[in-house]
Image 1: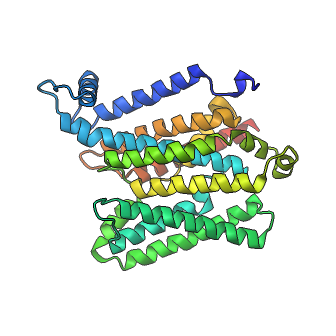
Image 2: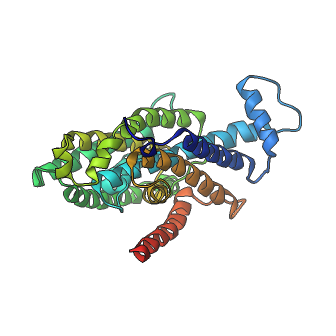
Length: 343
C-alpha cells in the first residue's frame, strides 16, 4: 500500500477545488459589466435546471459570454500546466514544458495554415483549425522522435530537447512565411498567435474537457514512472520501467492535449513552465501529488491572468498570451532567483 503522504488526499482536492471554483466565480462576475456573485449563481443554477431567471439579471452576459470563456480558460490552464509538469518530469529539465518538444510550434503551424487558407469542416466552424492543429502536433511528434531515434538509438532527453528546439525554430519560420502571404487574414493570424480565448463556446469547452479526461488520465496514471525518471533513465530501467514505452505514451498524450489547446486558444506561453514549479514548492516533487496540484494550479493561474487581461486596459482587451508571458516571465525569474539563493 502506498503511504497516504505520497498521494493527493481528499482534503487537498477539496481545498484546490474550492480555490478553482472561487476563481471561476470571480471571473464570471468581474468585467466591463459587474455582476453580483449571488445573481451569477442564481442564473447558472436556474439555467442548468431550466428554471425562470429573475428579472433584472442579465442571463446572456453570464451564460453566453463569460461562463463558456471562463470554462475554456480554466480547462486550457489545467491542460497546459499538466503537460508542463509531465514534460519536466519526463525530461528531467526544469525549463521543459509542452512547447519545448516543438509540438506546440507544430500545432501552431497547422492552425495558421488552416486560418490562412480557410480550412474548415462543414457545420463545425472551429473544427478545421482544431483538426489541423492536432494533425500537425502528431506529425511534429513523429518527426522529432524519428530524428531523435536516428541520431541516438537510446532517445536520450538531451537529444529530444535539442531536436525539439530546432524544430520550434523551423515551425516559427514557417508561420512567419505563411503570415507574409496571408493577405487580409493577417490580422486574424497575428491576434490568434498572441493567444486569445475571447468568443469561446461550450463546444470548445466540451472538446477541451474530453481531451483532458482521456489524455490527462493517461498522464496522471504514469505518476509512478515519472517518479522513477527523477533518478535517471538507467535506474528507471533497473526497477522495471519500460522507458521507451512510457516516453512514447506521455509524449503522444501531451501532443494531443497541446494540439487541442492551441486550436482553441492560440499560443499561450509560460503556463506549463511556471505553474509546475509553483506546485512543486507547495506539494513537493512527488508526481502523485505534483500532477493534480499542477492541474488545479494551472486552471486558477490562467483564469486570474485572463481576468487581468480583460480589465487592466478596459474597454480594450489584452491578448491572454501576452499577459501570461509578461506575468510568467517575472514569476519564473523570481522562482529561479529564490532557488539559487537557497542553494
